[in-house]
Image (tube, rainbow, N blue to C red; front, side, top):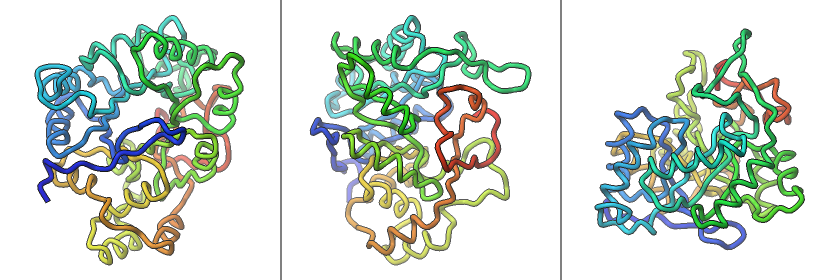
Length: 334
């Protein structure tokens, strides 16, 4: 198959509105890596691109989008793309939210953003530091209410700068509180959350899907390259059951895990800068896992998160206090 012509299937939001491709590209990469990786990904066929100002690389992403798409000097129709960005915890104050969005839109060199997410439900002290800390090493928190942030996102939809709005890292109670907000104009179309066979997150997935909120999985391969990984931490793609199923289907462990995800009904946004793995990650739609194989993979669940934002544990809006959450790697930051 000529990978440059491959078009992965699209999916729709559960409310019927058109959404993105099932497989997108995560961009939590440094500024030198993200540009070449994105160019390769677009050439291979990726059109769902997940961004965040927290990654500090949206300018580099914008240059590639300008180069490749009709939003700039390129030839690929901008409307074929689905671009996501986010509002980080230091910008949840409504006075800061719109400014953060405008910067992302300018950095990405876009006229309109497809999806804007509140990245975390907890507020952090405003300023230049993404992770402001107090003496004990935990985050310096603010008491900003994410329901007020949501009103700013709704206004951006009304003015036509954003097509859809959603949330990330919200638990069931926080989702429900947002849905119950008086005067709510737009429901969140998605909740982007961590999901992998080590952290199946079944309760939250079911909660969202029953309420027509699409789920997008970040770290779907278990985030093996996270900076705080320990030598003794298990490696998802080296699990015997994953390798066994891969041999049966003649697929890589990564393809098996991503197929497990989309077969559960949500989108996945793996990160890679390797052209072969980028291609492999996109080609998961010409095989299926049996019910038994799905169960075997789900049985790997350890209720372990790779990203726990443990520095925000003291926040009343810390999202991971719902049972059961075991942090993997012990990072005091993420």
